[in-house]
Image (tube, rainbow, N blue to C red):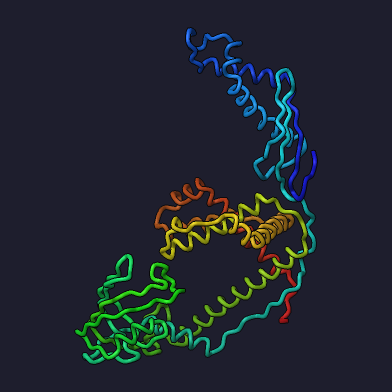
Amino acid sequence: MALIEGCRHSIEITVPLADVQAETERAVVEVTGKARLPGFRPGKAPASLIRTRFAAEIRQDVVEALVPKAFRKAVEAEGLKPVSQPRYSDVHFHDGEPLKFKAEFEVEPQFDLGTYRDLPVVYKEPGVTDADVEERLDKVRDQKAEYVNVDARPLVDGDYAVVSLESLAGAEPPIQQDELMLKIGDENTLAGFSEHLKDLSPGDEREFDITYPEDYDRETLAGKTVKFRATVKAVRQKELPEANDEFAKDLGDYQTLDELKASIRTAILREREFEAQQEAKTKLIDQLVEAHEFAVPEAYVDRQIEMNVDRRLRALAAEGIDPKQIKLDWEKVREAQKDQALKDVKASLLLDKIATAESLDATQEEVDREVQRFAKQQREAVAVTRAKLQKDGTLGRIANSIRTEKTLAFLFERSRKSDQ
């Protein structure tokens, strides 16, 4: 056995002649049973004729049967754990001789765990000001706002125009919306719409062209010029609810506005604590990766790249973009993502080793809580959800995710924190 480079090993294997002959006889018998030769009943052709007529098939059967079996036996004897499919070469297979071949494969990385407790990290306890609370309260009021029709008049900046919109040319598929509400002059409204709709009154109709930006979030419209017909149906203005005790009561289990503000303060603080801790945990992981230099199997890196790409494609699908229409140059993708994937794999291996060293594992209760959450989302019985998650392997991934989060929490809790 020889270490080629990193985690890649090479091993030369010899299969004893007796095993080769026994496997050859088995292959001959199997081929004989399937062979159809003129002048012979099925399964009755002489073995010598079968060996001659089907030599290539017999040879292939013997190699395919013996090579993987011999490889597994050899690596077990060496105490190795392959993590990639072996690549076979230099196959030596001649009559009356043992079968010899070479196998190249990758194994799990071996490394010693360095210091991971008491690592220094910048972390500042977040705070919440009264202004933060008021800003969040204003957002809640905005979400509960009512849009009230006003007397018919020409549209001005700040008005909400209710329009019927249809594309006449340039859009594929065509656009047809019967009741679209746009805020005139707002930064989130394309300037072209505000320009052409301003000064129109309910009942007015206008045709105009809109050129979408090259970076528009809908790819089917990005950079396109579309001809629209718009009919104004109504003019509305936004009315915000007054921030008082009654407003608080309408939102939930609050008796006063002060109770609502206290709840908002707590929510903002938890959000900021989570974000600050996540940032600190990321910095801790970066430290660990930089402090541990070890080889990583290419198979792990490729798998991580595939996971990252798959995650991105699913995100695009959620945005309405068909992943099948995206043609990927896998070599370019691999090269572009290799460094990040390598870092991700190293981080995962380090966290796994720390979890093992500290006996950090997901409890059954923790896994059950996640299963119940999934079941609630899917609106189905917990037992049904558990069976599905067990079948597709998600249950194991849930346990691994919990284990990882526990390990990150462990690192953060035992880190040496400073404001700068």
